[in-house]
Picture: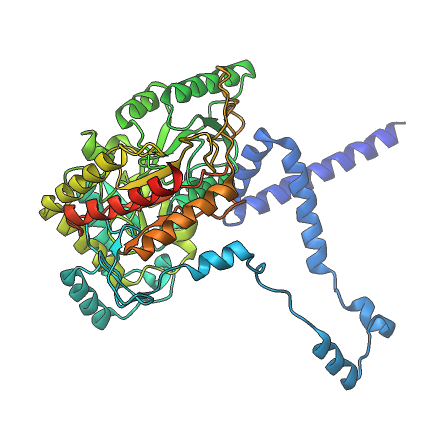
Length: 534
C-alpha cells in the first residue's frame, strides 16, 4: 500500500514539474502575456467559448500536420483520369452562373430612364437625349464645389506631381503628405484634437463602429439609421437596443431600461454607445443635438454621430450640427463625416480626440486594409474646406434656396415633407387627398405602448405599398425630366436594410442654383404632383 502511494506521489510531482517547465517555457515566448490576458478575459466572460476555441485549435493543428495526399498516393483509385476529349467536352458543356440576378421589367424600365449627361455634371448639365440643359436637383452639390475651377486646377497640379495614387494601404505605403494635411484641416475646421481620413465614404462609419464596439458592449441606435451604420453594428457583434426614430424621449426610456436590465442580472459595466445621424439620409429629419448630448452625459454613454449629410451644408460655414446648435465638437466622442458629399471630393473622416483617432489607425478595418484615397481628391477636399471657411455667403445662398423650396412645398396637399427645414435634402412622400386616389395612406394604428428595444421594428410601424409608390414616384421623375428638371427617387437596395424605408422623391438643394432656378424647378415638380394626385 505504501509502495503504491509513493508511486502516485512521484507521478504527481513529475507531472507538476512538467507543467512548471511548460509554463516557464511559455512565458519566455514573445507575446505570451497578450495570449494569457486574452484567455483570462475570454474565460471570464464566456467559459464555453474557451473550451470551443481549444477544440478548434487542436483541430487546426491536426489538419496542418496531417498530409492530405498520403492516402491518395497509396490508393490511385481515388483519382479519376480523364482523356483530353472528355476534358474538352466538360469545358464545352460548362455554363457559368451569372454574377447577379437578371433585371425584371420594372428595373429595366428604370435603368432605361436614367438620364445621360453630356460633359461635366453641375447645376445645369446637358442631357444627351434632349441636347438641352436641365436644372439639377438630383446631385449632392450643396455648396457648388463640384466643377469649381480653383479646385479643378489644384487637383490637376496634384495629379501631375503625385500621380493618381499608390494603390496601397494607408499604414503601409499609401500615405501622402496631402492626406495628413487634410486630417489637420478637418480637425482645425471642426475644433477637435485630431481626425482620420478614410478612402471611402460608405465604409467610414461601418469601420468606426466595430473599431470601438465589441462583443458584450451596448449600442443604443435610432431605428432609421442608414445602411452603412447598420452594417457597422452588425460587424461589431455588440448587443443592440433600438429607440423610435428621432424620438429622444424614447431614447431616454431605452437608456433607463438598459441600466435596469444590467442591475437585474447583476452584469458587469460595459462600454456603451449611442449611435445616430445628424441629418438622416432616410427622410432628412434632424436630431436634437443639445438634448442628445445631455442624455449621453447623464447616462454615461459615448456618442457616435454620423454627419455625412450635415457637414458642409448646415451651419454658417458648413461645420454641421455643432455650429448650428453652438455645441463644442469635443462633446461628441466620434464625429463622422463625408468628404464625398459635403466637399464633393471623396472618402470620409472621423474627428475626435487624439486617442480616438490613433486607435483607428490599427483598428479601423477600412483604414488598415483599403487603398488610400487618391491625393488629388484629398487636395480637393482641403480646398473645399478653405472655400467654406472663407465664403459664408455660399451657405447663406444654400439656406435661402432651402427656405424658398420649403415655402412652395408646404402648400401642396398631396405630399408630406418629413425633412427638417434646415436639411439640404428634402424628401417628398405621397399621401391620399381624395377618395378615388390611386394611393392609400400608410396604415398605422397607434397603440400607445412603447416599442420593444430589442427589435428594430417599431410597435406602430406604418404599412405602405412599396411597389405601387415606387411606380408612381418614377412617373413623376420621368415627367420632370421631360420638362428639364433632374430629380430622383431615394435609391434603395431592397432586402438589405433591417427595416424598409418608405419610397420618396429626394430633392437636393444647391447654392450653385439661383433662387429663381430653384423655385422654377420646384414649381415644375409641384405641377406634376398636383396633376397626378389631386
